[in-house]
Length: 230
Image 1: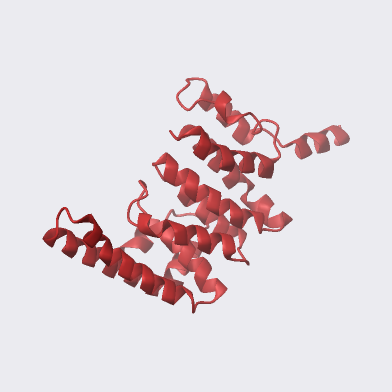
Image 2: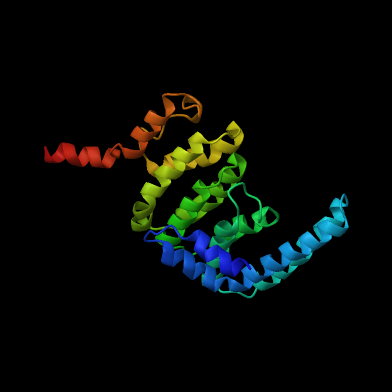
């Protein structure tokens, strides 16, 4: 059962574990539906090999039930559902690929995001190995970052830097990388992070050191404050 396995798999032994476990608890109904969908898909696959359209039937039915459930939930429960879908997804993006549009919609339309919830999403998306899945999911998470106040954005800045470095490191097309990369640079407002994507190739030997510098260098505000006090 997903609810039995995911909380343990989602733990990172950090200050955000309570946010992760709380979201999974509030989205128990969603995990149960996903579990049923996996079981029905395995059954269909075992009896109808090669019939892709019919293999889609279990997912279509579960998607409809998920949509019905989402329509009656509070904003708090919907934010928990978005976090849970990201946490349940495997690093290659499989597992909830059929629900990716719902993830983007849940994140972009919700208000009331906390810095802890956004930090969990940024960290989780950074764990995805598939570049297209990372870039697509990151674009949705940045919609939640946009809804944070000044203090909230400041709190997630280290995670934004980490997400930017991860985005620069994965293999993904320039079109997919471009939009989230530009948004991250704008949010960071950092001269080092403002370097164009194409100038930091993922495979270059010198790229890791440059990304490390961009991740740790002081912001323009910090440099200005240091100048004023010197």
